Image 1 (cartoon, rainbow, N blue to C red):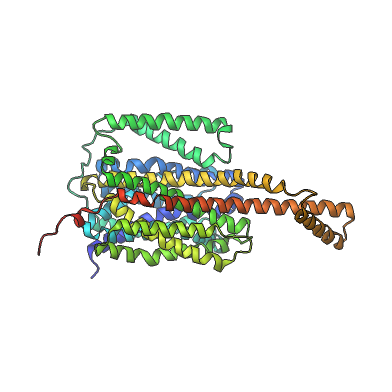
Image 2 (image 1 turned 45 degrees about the vertical axis):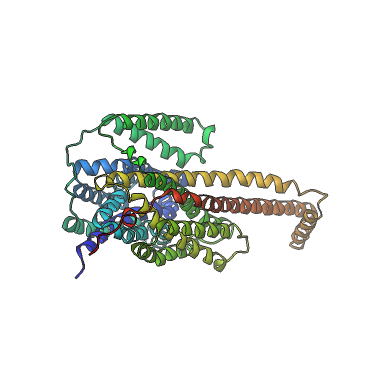
Length: 513
């Protein structure tokens, strides 16, 4: 017989994975969505932005909402909303309607991750939380890695609408299982809390402004755009005001006092860095494969899958080791070492790199992430009292998402700016006095003349070819510098792992049987 705990795990994990998958599975379908709904690709990017903004607004509120309405009731509501909005997204007749339904999908899906994590932490005893977080991490880390591959295959084989329709059976099954097996803990307030409408307003507008700024900043030239400046000011003023208010009122929406626990505060820092590095690399590698190696979207997505395979293989092992009493801090340090080395491995790629050159670093990064995610979550949540678990998982999830948004914005800006800098440096060496540059020009000109071009045209074509090589090499250098920087970040923060404390069930003597 399958235990009730296993059924609860399947119920909440399936809904959380469904939501996480939707953050990445739609990316590769954007050109198809734009073409189908008579929109430009830039307009279609609002399909992603609208979802992320709505998601970012609801995430920090999920702990308060669970205590107000009841965790089970809220879970049933958001899974229903996410499933219905997925159906509406698939049926959307126009881009504005699709964006509206994506807002609804992001709003209902925003609470799924922290709610599911809170249920699992509640369901498993402290000594088995490593196993619980291994199950949770398997979906949360692997889903965004496998999402582009799945999205590309579904879009090519069927239609972009099926990217949304696949949520329906998962959502319905999750609803049935949650209603049957999930129960509320006795300490939930269920309506006794007072609603802070000013706090809700400041949080919603502030988080929305921050997410739009991060998503559209590079596209609009950051602070060269009045729109981005206004968003930055709004986000700063409203979020600072919100934090001050939360520290002063009796019943805050976000429990910032949880940061008094050293392990939780350190874990919040680590998960922000993890979001920054992990999700940035998820964006970088497919871009490198497609723009510089010339691979198709399907091929790039396929060869990003080994990272998820490495994670899936090692997550159960990490959960087992934690359950056997291994110190999670050393497992976490090991994960950062492997993750940092794999990113430095990516920084050694070149235009001749093939699939097998990338495979080993993909697998090693997946392995490293499994040794990071599970111990980090377990150590971070260990000191949190049970009645505060929902608030803690909400804060943990929102900081990871902010880290990923900042990271993606940072690396896209870095790539663009660094490529320009590298291009100017490389172009400075293409002079009549540089023998290598002259040799390359002569060879390109000779090739053009062999193809029938006259000397003047051949010279112009040769210059264009050399300029193309310079641009390409400048782009390669910018990618490699980002990978190098991210690998260094992982390695530099390793000593800070000692800020985390051992779990209480390992520090305290266990009663004899």
